[in-house]
Image (cartoon, rainbow, N blue to C red; front, side, top):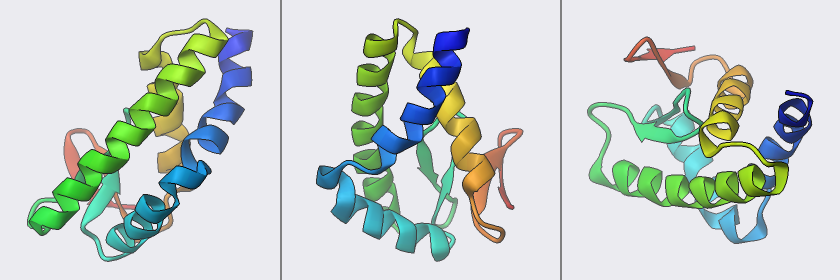
Length: 111
């Protein structure tokens, strides 16, 4: 459990600050601000219903990058990807600014 908490700090640092992800992160920020994409409890993002197809494509791209990072973090910390995703999801939802979407109880809601 102690390792999980140590890994928690790494989750956001590694998952969100990778230089190769910078263009996708810029587009993600804009899509989230526009109400097209939101954070999910599993550490991934999803397109909000009614969002353009480009938002769903961006979500897929970001999720592929995040999952790769989560696997790396899980492997280096001796924990499961599911646990890393759960920690990341919690942190990302907590950090989501008011007015942006998050998935809560199976429904997209504005925070």
